[in-house]
Image (cartoon, rainbow, N blue to C red; front, side):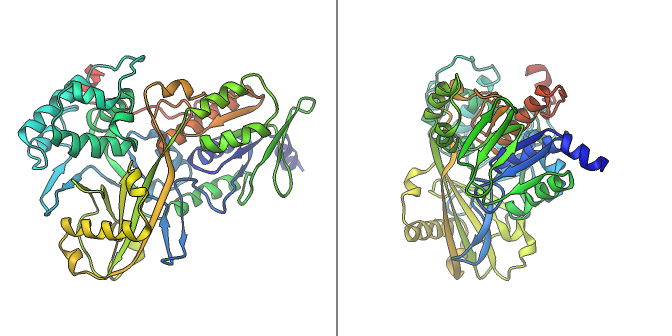
Length: 472
């Protein structure tokens, strides 16, 4: 009876949306002692970072390869909270391959940050002497903070700092623009500078790259177990299409096609376009119009991935950066996910920030991908392609043009006991899983503070190391 009373006396929260933002908020709140119901309109967890059984190839695949870095402290914290941190494969090496197969390796050395990456960059065949000088000049300039009111794009800044064609095509357009999933002329300088400092300057640990060794939705199964062990629940195939606030009872009632959901608090952990769609079905509130205008400023960029199964191994690399072609990144899922026990090989090719590639038909995209892959790995020409899948995530990320921060609201919403989460909110990070996890933790902190149980949930950033401790 006492346990039942304690359970009934808990504050209740409904988190709408089970992407990284919603899951991180729900798990943090459940750990804080609140009773959470996590509602997701689809039949699986993960949102834009999920996996599913693809009917065309009868394989469980990720909707796109998602990676994290050592600087993603909140995403790593979320993984640790739900007990899946050991399912991430980490590496500090990046192999760049030119058509024809010539390889260059980037990675840390014994030198202190920010010099730790310089030795391998100096010997990288993918960059000419002029390219290396241009990159060193740009990195030095980015040691200085970008003014908060800067309206300059990355493209304009690179032109002003005389970047060579090789530096532009092999680093800025491929590595940095891919990380932010947008064209360099559409990226605010502040966000490009943040990526450079976090991945290449602050420390070798911050720039290490992690990839899941299991399908993403399997990775997130830990969230379901975590919530259920704490008296919370996940409601899949549950689409919230309206919300009402009762001032007298101080409770929310959320309309679904089945039973209504009631709770003391609500977290809207939805993509910006889904949030905009729900706004007209929310109660009138001062500030709702401003939020609607902020949402209108956001736009999406696509990411495409081509999944290929061959009858033999085509490379011994776990992953690679592919230069001078439409395909950008290779992830060797046969090696990264050995549990698949394939007799041949399974690779995923990722094409970032390419609306032109996204416009291709399935046949055109797969044909182009296989043709270009053969320019990097000769074994492809002799291999038999057993099956293939094309995934187009048209709403993969939101754009980060100059001035976008004015349209990124905090966790506080115009409504009482209602909070916002999502990678598009004011996290200080671009459109990444880390931004989603941060937003969830910020929303959880705000709820805990509102009930008089303030606690620190947001994981602190990694501290700069080496000389960066003095220069940061």
